[in-house]
Image (cartoon, rainbow, N blue to C red; front, side):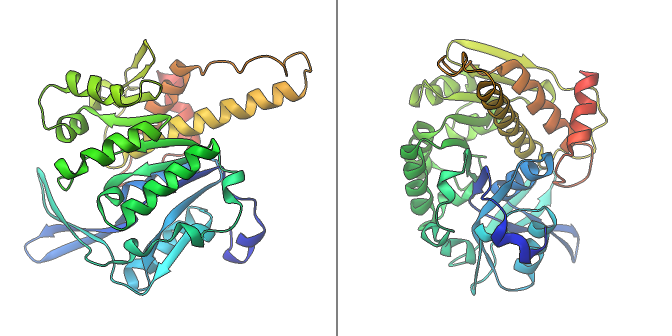
Length: 328
């Protein structure tokens, strides 16, 4: 959608708040490749690609790196009213080894830290169905404190919260209180088995999962398991789905696509239920039906698999996802 039409479009149903950054990947002795990225930004793009009105809420620089992120956000049809620009340096993730990945972040006083939730367009909270948090944004002060405060406000308003810590090496014991707080606010928590090992500094991922679920027993946990697919823990119920048969090109962005797919599926289910209720007075007084977690999980796994069909964090297309669902 052209930028000139942004002010007249309805506020988005889904917002992902956090960091957008540039990956600088060493591809040779004196060669580097730059790619737009950031966990929370990737989730916003994936949701938009599936067809839900989406925005990324965060701040980017005003230089070439920021221009690339802005252009990619516009191309993804994200609501640009939520994207702030700051005359500060860009946030960079420097990947100096790829096998296994070795990286560090460069961003002292960078643009992402200037994000101001109070500067978002007025009234957007009334139309938001889900807001997503996670990534390294929750390790970076004062941004982390602002995001936690935003999550607390949204939780109080009844807006659904999803949370993916997306473990990185900057998440040491200082992150423990953030992990617990965000888990307590979340309706859905997405983690991988590798995340659990890193976040809780243990090889006993089953015990780590028990601890995480203990922070908020009412939250649903999406546990991604790599080549084994993913599982959902909801209350005392459990489902696991294997991925469809595909030729994996690149796993970058698969987890981001998986959580975006889960939220998209939940939004679709809610919309269908609301439509059914509006056409049947007898249904209006009944309790909302419980989510069909198995179907939501199948869709999430198909989204993560679709993201593996292309190099880089390319958002999955809905047609790709539906084709994979037919195979599984």
